[in-house]
Length: 311
Ligand SMILES: *[C@@H]1O[C@H](CO)[C@@H](O)[C@H](O)[C@H]1NC(C)=O
Ligand SMILES: *[C@@H]1O[C@H](CO)[C@@H](O)[C@H](O)[C@H]1NC(C)=O
View 1 (cartoon, rainbow, N blue to C red):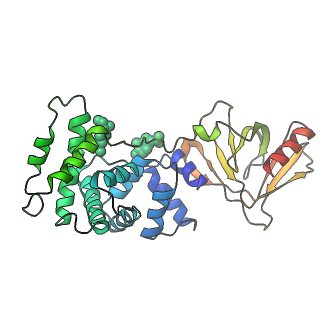
View 2 (cartoon, rainbow, N blue to C red):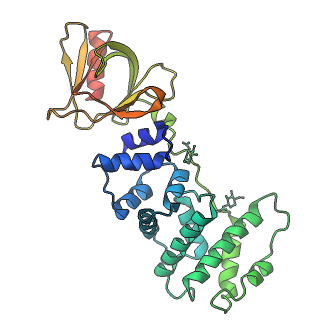
View 3 (cartoon, rainbow, N blue to C red):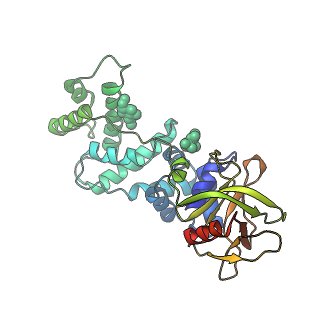
């Protein structure tokens, strides 16, 4: 998951980063390319960019349509009124700007709402039309640029006949209107990929020398240990790390090395290559090539402190 966030954050690919991240997870066997698994990942994983989720779910390809359906299916709308359900739905991603995408998402929403609440509307279309009317009402009531604020009477009359030619109960429309008037829809921020917070309160940080995976030279790197991952940077002030080593399944030990003192080594006890990644020049994210990571500290004491912290 952390690798995923890193990739979505760092990649400079022409594709939407989220798509890259999902592809990476799928190619590396960390996520199944099944609508249900991808939808659950997008729905449950915290800290993903909600604008990117909205764009991803709005794509027209068949697989994306299935993922959208599964994603909407993870929402539980039973016994919620339409505004309550919309509040939940619109909080789980950011509506994309494109009309066709919005349309697909609102259709999926309406189908799910009616599935959870049979009998409230005559048809899914009614639910779909009313949902749009509510989103517009939200803007009219709360956007300061809209001077002409619709009254309840106008809202009720605007929605006349939308229930397969019949009127919806005034009681229902009143409840929805009042709810929106007292509180607009909240829209999630798209700051999901910002790693800054991740580095805010590290378990340990400091300079270490690190030997390259391919080119065997020692380079000074600023290391941050947090969230069970080791990040390294070129400078202490860099916002973006050069690389990330998730520590899950790894061991650490002190090591004697002929070229540098106070060495420690990160290795996989099963002898496998370490799953990690780094950015090459131009910001391209590549998988690390390390069988093990060899690091050198400034003193025996620092080495032991790093080993303790990593353990
Ligand atoms: C609802 O209104 C608020 C306040 O104007 C706005 O920030 C938000 O984007 C609107 N929500 C939708 C779904 O249009
Ligand atoms: C979130 O994703 C959108 C769309 O891909 C992108 O424009 C935006 O910059 C991203 N936000 C952050 C904080 O990365």
